[in-house]
Length: 392
Ligand SMILES: Cc1cc2nc3c(=O)[nH]c(=O)nc-3n(C[C@H](O)[C@H](O)[C@H](O)COP(=O)(O)OP(=O)(O)OC[C@H]3O[C@@H](n4cnc5c(N)ncnc54)[C@H](O)[C@@H]3O)c2cc1C
Image (cartoon, rainbow, N blue to C red; front, side):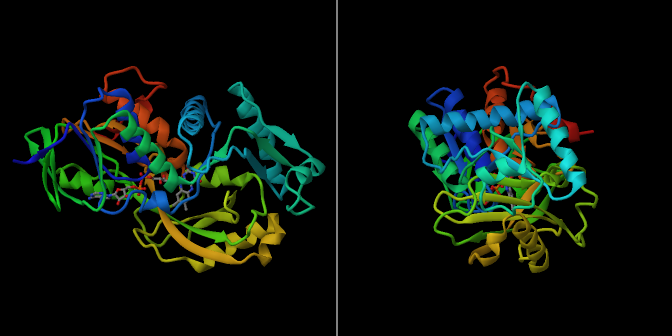
């Protein structure tokens, strides 16, 4: 007889782990929840990224989305811990006058949501971060951001899920190879290890989510890989204390992409993002480039981004580089993730498309999806993220 589950989550990245975590919290403790990944847990993008928990104040919806998620991270740390949560705050840096003007804009945006960010003069900045270049024209400090180690965070979410519900099963190294349906209703999945029947399947496969949708005979999901090159240094003690980023990073990372994401000849770009690691070292990013699923290091782009990092933290020029790698962000064509039911096939749910904010947004994503499955009211307005917006 075929194996059965009440619910299958495909994809053991930070998004799939958070979906399982919140399903275990909100559904009856007898619900059989199965997490499948073709590799190890956190073996893809969520193990090849940075861990900045970033509150973005662009508008009320974005602020609620990110701030609520960062609050859920804090709560998970208090209950569970074990994932190098570090409430460093974020320091926005600039080195040219146009970018300095952005401090006031950002400060005003935080204020509009009843939050605050503080302007630091060069002396205050040096007190906070003595290792930064001495000619920087001040900075903006936002206390609400933090840093986590995403691979450990996946484990923490799954541990709590299994503590709450002993019917949560995590099965790595089990690829989904097909999706079974009965007319307009999902019936389950086919895997390398056999067929598993379930009335609900969640597609949380990041950059592979269009592939999984295709297995279910669905139209192509508008998700495209956006590559990022990263470097980690080998300090015993991190040369920086705070999560640092160029203020222009916001424009660069979250503004409209100027290139067609389906093309593979994008020259790419970069903006500095630096994170202290609790075990020493400094994690430095971050580049962005559309070039399909290619995970080769782009040395030229990486070199340029390192020069920018050294402009802000000159000591990095002498730092040994211990590892470089590339991660693929799941970029959604309208720059918002897809979280909710897929309207063309009953029982198929989607949680993907978080681009460079998937670590930040994992808790709220898992919660919004689980609340919809459980038929409960959602913490924040979930309608902007419904996948139905891509269905004619
Ligand atoms: C360079 C870089 C820096 C970043 N920095 C930050 C940051 O500082 N802060 C932040 O918030 N976000 C950051 N991000 C974004 C974040 O890493 C991603 O948004 C997030 O990790 C996406 O998670 P995911 O679970 O959707 O995808 P993934 O982690 O890729 O998980 C998808 C999983 O699905 C599995 N899968 C695929 N197909 C199948 C199948 N057929 N059967 C079974 N399993 C399957 C894969 O093996 C994989 O494990 C960064 C990303 C990059 C690349």
